[in-house]
Image 1 (cartoon, helix red, strand yellow):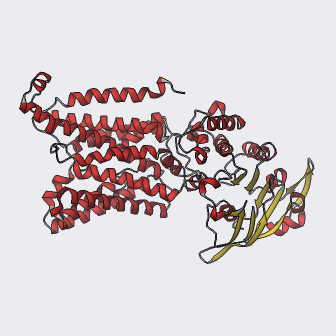
Image 2: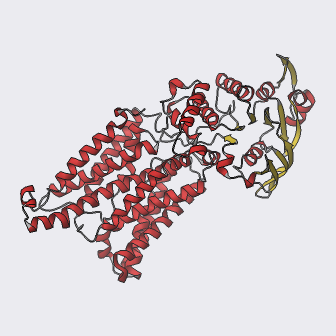
Image 3: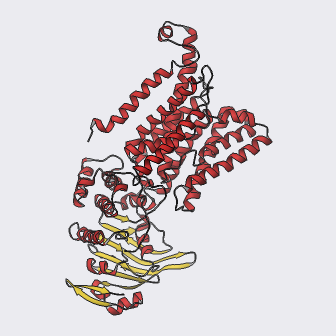
Length: 339
Length: 250
């Protein structure tokens, strides 16, 4: 059972990620070379430790966190198109950041992250409660509702931000970018890692709940509790990323889908690959963002948006041509007929 | 399992009213009746999927509601038609979930043996690494049954197991039900729409009309002209094949 083939993709992803990570440490405005680093060049070492390494770690945590958050949400909602960006989790977290800026600015980062946690969790619960109440026949409707819900929240955020004159401040927090990451202001995003490990521990529970309510109850799994825990984990990962880095869309949507095409939906089998691939994707996008118009930087959201949308379309076409049976777009349930 | 005075209301409308019966152990019991007669609701209540408004369900030594859900999952399995059919799990991964109440996520050697046995019993070896969303309806249903077998429960509850299956797969499914009872000694309770499957493959039939039990007897005592006409309000003819009564209606 333990063949090398089974882990081939994991090994390849891991190796590529490691090489790219090392490479990324030496990409930037100031050239750092290994020789100077170890010969005690104070300035280079400082840049390395204060900016390059934190940036890499933030990128990795973001990639791992957002892709795993998407994976969990897709499983629990039984819908391949649900993710933190199409399930209104990101906007809910942003709403929390806004509230903290308006009402408790003195608390700074902690105020932002605590409120972002609360609103992200609440927003996601409300969204999932809503889509469960109204059982949509068409799976594509669910993310559409999520996007609409997110846009309504976005509208409210804009309105309040305008009223309290925090629009400019807000936009620096909202647009996803790693440019401002330095030691001391990003460590919160590490929180994604223990949450991902927690998700791995509950992986089979999430799979079982993803099979349906009756299926879970039959196996003695508390459907509502697992749904609740899973969504909370997802929302907390998203909130920590959104607070530190800003909005990074598409990762939670496309990464788990691409990995599932090859590895299937068993979370124990796909979670590590999903996490590695997510980290690789964000890292590559960040490196492109840093080099394209060097010495200036593009916001990573721009790169992720372009690459993500192309990949998403390619994925749809692939599914329509090859995987018609694997992932059905329109039908949520098998039609019932009388035998 | 002893059921007394079961009641259920939806939006003020009574769908199950004063239903009492005892489930005969080691037999196949089919619940039949017209649409909306409450048979699926009764099934839902005795499998704890649906909360009951009133009544007792005595299972082994205590009421069903006092059972720990993990412990109950080792005694009683329920299979409905409301599963996510898009999940890309392999047959083997699905069947392995049947061991979840016993070992959680860490499968023991005993679990693996049970999984192998269940897959072999349902003749799914050649499909075991295929994804369930790529299987035909009949194959997928067999994979679910294999999971229930791996779950190793004395009671097996199946809600319309022949739904969506063609005649070939439906009759195979019913033969499997018979084997579950005869070879593995399980108590099987089914909700069925096809009267003749119930007549040919079960030991007892419980017929529901308007949320009440119209008749609960051995097959021969239910499948007769008078009883069936009363239940379904259509004329029936009864013929005998292999010593079993079968109904003809049109």
